[in-house]
Amino acid sequence: MTYTEAIDFLSGLRVFAATFGLENTRRLAALAGNPQHRLRFIHVAGTNGKGSTCAMLESIYRAAGQRTGLFTSPHLVSFRERIQVNRELIPEADLARITADLRVKNQGEAITLFEFTTVLALVWFAEQGCDLVIWETGLGGRLDATNIVTPLASVITNIAFDHEQWLGDTLAKIAGEKAGIIKPGVPVVTAAEAPEARAVIAATAGKMGAPLTVVKTTGDGQARAPFTTFTAGGGLPALPLALPLIGAHQQINAALALATAEVLQPLLPVTPEQLRAGLASVRWAGRLQRLVRPEGGELLLDGAHNPAGAAALRRALETEFAGRQPVFIIGLLGDKKWLEICRILAPRAGRIYTVPVASKRTADARELAAAFRAARPDADITVCAGLTEALNASKDAGFIVITGSLYLIGEALDRLGSAPAGAGERGLNEWSVGPKLA
Image (cartoon, rainbow, N blue to C red):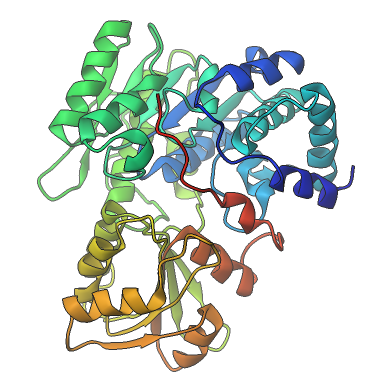
């Protein structure tokens, strides 16, 4: 099987099963020799901040000398972004080889893309002898394919409204799904702020006998570490840290990563110097990512695809980029709360270009423009046929924010040559409305 054939095969797998559950993933993992039993994990769930927190944890433990696996989704350009060892993407030949082997082992049984990819990643991480795998959930947690592992720690970033059609229409219900990753006796670390969400997480941890650490925030949204000393004997670096990722919300994610490192210190020793080095070198594309446009001007790329993400972007623009009114290029998915996202972002924009994204779920760019006009009647708003047209129309702008769907962020990175090659692979992020979790 070639890499192209592997991508074609993966593209043909169903996005959703008839019912959610762990049976398919456990079955295929067993046929592959249960590679998860040879690995150690930190399991990360939450609404926003999962990827950034995973990137921070990976960078910290790699700086500490661990051979790290990193499993995240969705990808921005190349499907191989989802499966990395020491931040190196799985090679095309190995992805094709493991895909071919698992296809034979699966014997034509019904399986979804994410279930198959989860086992593919486990096989690769075991083959590579990873010391630690940073393991991000896909959707929810309780019935997510990644939940077949027993980790060293369960991490829950925050709880906000997103994917309500599957996870529930209250923060308590959503938290219940995310808290499904909590295992008996396994430490839990969370930065969930909403009282109803935190209560669910605390109750679940209590039932499981799982020690709970909560990262709290100050009134201004800055993180406050829930600890004052470091088990190894040195003091933890005080926040704010020298963190390359922009935004107050990233300080909270950093505090969450540090709290996890503190909890796991007896199992995974890390020095303060390694913590500092890891956080100072962390990278995570498409989240308040600054780039210089080839023809001049600054770009800021941020996948603010739900209201909480939009609010974080707005706060960053008001603090990190105070006094600058950027040009916005924005495209969103129609099954997101795009009306609310437009209302949140409208006050921060100078000109606004609305675009469709390369998905059958795209929101209509004309409807996005109407939403922005309702929120900002004085704004200069243009509907464009796509990203290229919007970039050409805004070529005189000194500061452009490309935001909304991660589909759009991936397209921008692809066009700007700032991501690994993966032509045609962004479609593997596609899904359709499926059943609610049962």
